[in-house]
Length: 80
Length: 229
Image (tube, rainbow over all chains, first blue to last red; front, side, top):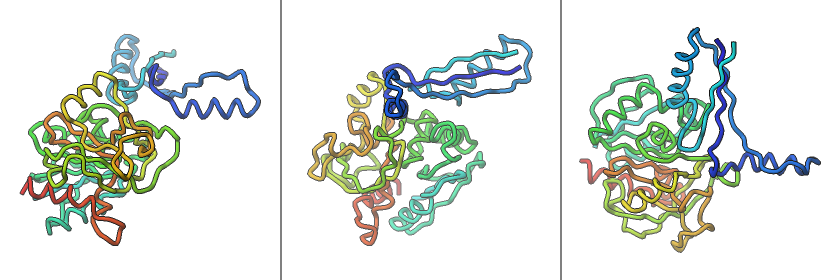
């Protein structure tokens, strides 16, 4: 089973990298771009067939390593 | 004082801090590899600066989960003092020994320069050689030194006197002008509740000899020796 994890900064946490990306896009002729938030996308291959079990394990992985819950939120998506 | 300095793949200030410790104690600390789940009994554990695990995922995130850090957490819980410098500060926050986290500098640039710090308290085993309110000059070298914690955590740190050092101007004013990275409340270093764990972004170990431009960092090591010998 494949899993996709998205890690994003929590609302209210300043994202200077996102801001810099937004400014660059504006300068490159994309004035329609407003707020930009940057995050991480992590794809994992799992040796697990039970979706509920996989999700519980992924949740633990996110809390232990993949995300820093002081500043980040995460979401888990199971594929196939 | 017997000290251990941890070494991760990508650490690069372990030699500097070992030398600073040897300078004040006359005793070379033992260097402990990240894969070692156990090491000899020591009076002080130092988590040095550098780029452990190439800063993969988040600065300090991988190192915080290494075998040696599991042992450090155990010993810190027993009251063994832990000093985390720069990447070491990032590692001990990721390991949960200190609250909050270090984010990318607000201006997005790597900052490498001397900074001024206001010593917030002399009441700790790390800062007893300084006066509260004293201004010291030490270097910083980092891209992720922007301290962040939620409002409740910050309030708790402030109320309990857990701020060790704040960035300030040369005259000791704590304001934006003296802040090299956008750190909340100009925080440069914090203690845990019992003040046995100190994490700081600046490098006191690089300000212990006049030929390096100053000796203001030496007091930190001398203070520890006094408290721990």
